[in-house]
Length: 97
Length: 481
Image (tube, rainbow over all chains, first blue to last red; front, side):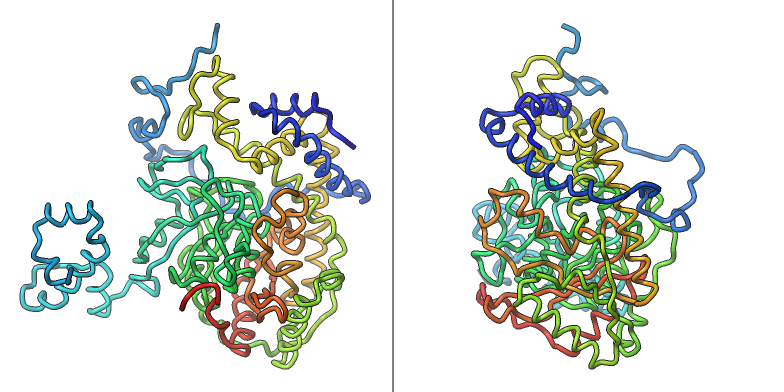
């Protein structure tokens, strides 16, 4: 199967990725080759097989802790690496035009 | 400048020479430590000199006390730049330490630095690092493997005495095999992932790389165990790995998956078969087992890992940390422009594949099917472990390949993971250790040992038995001794 450029652009938009012209030239072919390869899973009969949704067997998981307040990062530490901030907020470009 | 002369400088005089690079911080620190040792018996000024004084009093914190180590740049280190090999995190200084970093510091280890890696741990050659490739100390024209390429290379090159890496589909075991060192991916849940930059959360696991099996066991002993900040960290007690390390191979049942030796490159196959013969000679029995779904491992992995990655990497949006690209229009424009500039080609490919596999109309056909195949892979192993204690085979289909050999063909690069991904998908522990040099290529070949969940102790025991019999590899010949 092959992914069209339009489909690649649609996926990029969903993923909030902007693609360069070079990427638009190579990605449809590369992604199609990968999808062709993973499609060999279709050979397998998986009817009646439960999906493995947890990597840890239930007996190995730890019990949940009490839901209580614990110390965590303060605003200054949490904001320290932000590209832009104002007061105790992360600052982002205008959302509503 | 002699150590004695250095010590006569004032603080600001020293600072000036450090700035001018006439003196290194290391020289200054060693000079001061030497002076303390020579004089403090008379002066008594110091109550504690980290590591050394404890050692002198016989009060060492444990085997890592004072030992120089280094860690993959995927672990958060408070105040120390942490990039995960990506431009999108260039200059990022985390506000806290990862759980494993706390453990190492608490054990007295000296952390020398952060190690090169494929961007966001996505790769099998370290060539996807945004900060330039890392090279194999055995042959500088070859890759060290990936994604923990810097960890394996630094240990092989004797730049540090041990290192930590992470393994999502082989990222500890493959580079360990390529560089001739020991590496273990513990059972999912054995080591805390708190403060580890996430790639594929149902597969990621932290583990050590070291020059000997006993070293790797000592490192895992320190980092393993329950951490309540990681929901998936298991409460199971951690075995005492040293207690069974020297128990030998006698009586072990070693499963040899028939699917793993078919079509294997002959030079790699030769060393793996020799290792299996050695086990037999040491009193282990070889058991023929079948892992019939092995050939579907890569396909399942390259759906599940990108799907989880596309979700985990959504957080790099130019808002809370890392890069923000200026000049784009509006919030959405800023997100897309930042991600275009900050991510390299491999994370972009995986985000695209993962987004596609999770998108409306495709979820059942791709992601859900892959999770069902994951169940089939786990059943393969459950059946095999009814008849054996350890599964043994190759780590990689070939020895270390050359830089540039596979960079233009992502699918070829993925196929290098054929023997390693099933261990992560089935959530088992897996260890790689050297089993000699390739006869024609002259670089290391690795043997992989897989165990039952949480049975790392048996992997160490089996690995140590082979290591003792075959002796150490010579030092890597790509570097001066």
